[in-house]
Length: 360
Image (cartoon, helix red, strand yellow):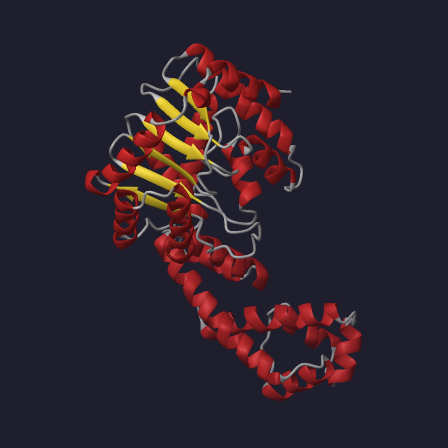
């Protein structure tokens, strides 16, 4: 790609964009800037490159500083260089790349941003995992642990893409599960719900890893099975959990939050009725706001949403922990929590009534 071609793709469409924002016709801008409408049209369509004088005249009519065009040139040159690198990684040929460069500025920005996000769904740092492990080994208070979990997620956690990948990893690890679910999210859900719907509601505008999306589709198919797991599952739930789910997803466009809560309750009820390996306890104690679940002795996943603002696509929402040494203290603590629950918490009649209350 020649530098001149890249400059034309950047400057021309931006002039057209600014002209249209100001409700100016081609003739309006061309006449005021002292050039012909045909020349301006070729410029906007990236068929020619403006001289400095012409660009200065256009900038004056559009009431922008020529420095803005210079900065635009610099910023979008970096953008196109980044896209060239991304195209090379994706093994796109030159013709395909030329078509990408011909896209609008906003589209190129969105494309680059999406690829960048998909490249940065990292696993939590080992030092963070060690801090979590130490926390569960030493801290007795559920609420103090929850506060520290939230702090670690906020300062050192994974973004939504990292959460989705960790969720798939955790699901594929064999072994017993123990979880504590306090608020709406990706963890306190069920395979009879389209996880793509949940993800889009929680993280609007954030891309989805295609391999994760395929796995979620398989989970949805598994939901028709009687009990699609080969290991026991124990979950402790806040009495308000499904109310949180209903409220959280009612805030998303086109989603019925109470229907989501109802379908989770239906699935859990069916699992309880068909397998003694699936157990639910209704919390008698306040465990905080974060969700957490372990798989065997190999992995743990923590989830917390600081607020409902989706504007920050890099916002940390989760921490993934793996390896026997890191996870063992978490497993021991969650198992101790389950084993010391009052009888009332796991009373089948009470749990059944709680689920039935949320089933439409």
